[in-house]
Length: 258
Image 1 (tube, rainbow, N blue to C red):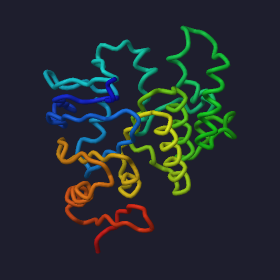
Image 2: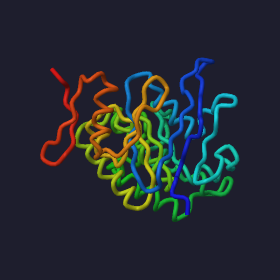
Image 3: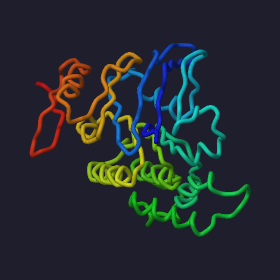
């Protein structure tokens, strides 16, 4: 059985006719969490958009495979069941209730114009409870703070119950306790066999992943386990040795160099 959940093969991409990704080759193993890190402009978000099928590769710019199939050949509804996407600054109607926003994640599972069934309601409740958003389920999204809104959008992605979750800056606007909750949640998803790929600016949090993909200038500069010293050195190098990776109380942390 193929244990590669999603991969980019010789993949390049452009934004407004400007090359951003350059011949990227990367494989993400099923049942693991990979953090994607690198300086601003490294192409991290663009890579995730290409993996999600939100942004097509450049002409003759390689291909993306999801669960062994060319992603462009997968029917939209089938892809939406297999892959959940949480992008930066995700838009959603402010007048929708929190419950209805999370229910949007169940659309791939519902027949055309069909009302949500018991399984849909159960999935949404589980997703909202897992992000501590259940108590706001009747509130309008526009009434929430940035951090609360982010937790609802995360619940929408979780409600899909997809095998692969791609998250671009999922910790945006979250305070430290809820960042810790997110870490616990990701670990639970991986324990269930899900594959998580997340772009993170918080390097200490990124070091808690199973694997780390390091990017610079639209290219992959390193891919390895977060436990590997070579990964630590590559992470320090991509940030011009202005950070140092240390182990404190059995936990890897990233510290700024003074």
